[in-house]
Length: 379
Image 1: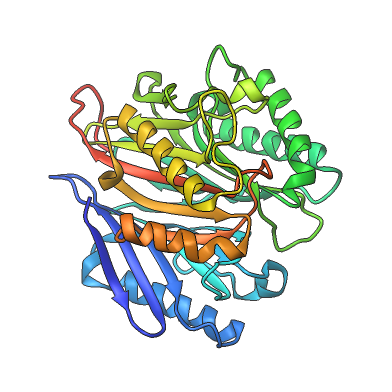
Image 2: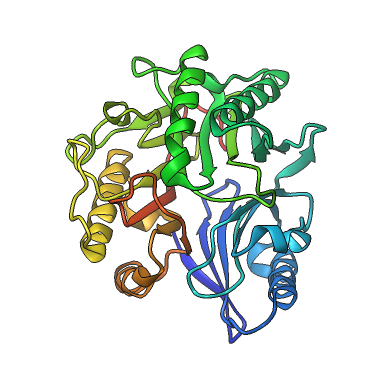
């Protein structure tokens, strides 16, 4: 997959992972990072929005529609007035401060020829000729403890899927779960999610869902658990696969959590690969290289590569990375490491403690691989 620098100047750096198949719809996975840390919030967000507007009319993205946007904000409560949509896209918002010292970064997803509509329940629906893609963002419940909020969020999400003829078990491909004060609240979310999954037929004997569960806050301080989710209607069970990489990783249920290490979706012209938040872990569920950030970074990428290999892909197919760090002091070490080995892959690096304190870093990845699956319709 070509990795392209679309813009690089004193104000902003824009990188794209561009998947352009023969005869199919092009996808652009774009990161927007600010380069000046001294401007106030209004100026920085205006720069982001102006950058998005230029991308919408740029020749490199001709014919592409902005489908999904995530703001990584340094102070979501106070920056809420600046968190806007540009063209009807799904908008995700999470307080995970960019570690380059700026107020915000963006992750954008463009699809050529997409048709977008917004349902009354807040779902952004992307229509393609053969599939309907459902983007849910900012799912939250402000009342109660984290266990109650998790149950309510999943219940609301399941009802929304049901109205579109979908189920959590059959159609949900990926979730992102952001937990305030993850060291304390994560276990409550895990218990509630597991109970809900069992009710919906998601067990170790069936399958789970690719996911990232990480520290994150919303614009409302009382929200303890925030979720984004992605589902595909009209997808057949045989199009979906689950990645394990047993030489490197163990099943998550062995240490009490319920998500897949990675999920693939096969279309007639491509394979989408969703790598869950991945850390420095071995196939016994143990933390590898405690307290050593460079070695943990190396092992994390080794684990991601093992998952990608199981999907017949490698880092050259990576569309984007999100890098989560527990300690701001580790940023320079990690940034140098990734710049040295994977300089061109679009990435955002943010402050977000992982669910187990000993993990200093977690990385999620999406990859897109050229494929020819004649039994399935094209993306």
